[in-house]
Length: 84
Image 1 (tube, rainbow, N blue to C red):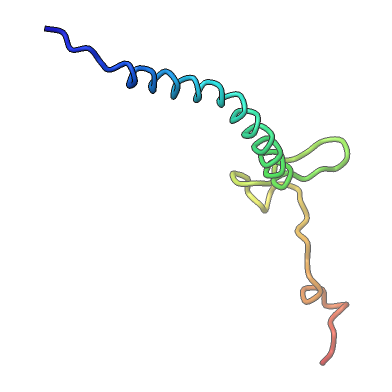
Image 2: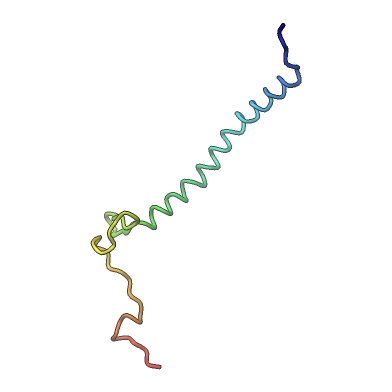
């Protein structure tokens, strides 16, 4: 005894599969157009650029030994202290 599936169920599965396959290129394009610039922004924010080469200063580097001078604020500079 074989049990056959109803035609509407088979048709619904085919339509669902076709809908997913046809929407897949649009999803890939949207992810690429959003993901690539976000990834580049994260990469650029984790590097320092001297005009010729870039140096990674993000996670995984020792901040004391990477050759980058930290930015100091006015409070750290004794020559520019503001008196109250």
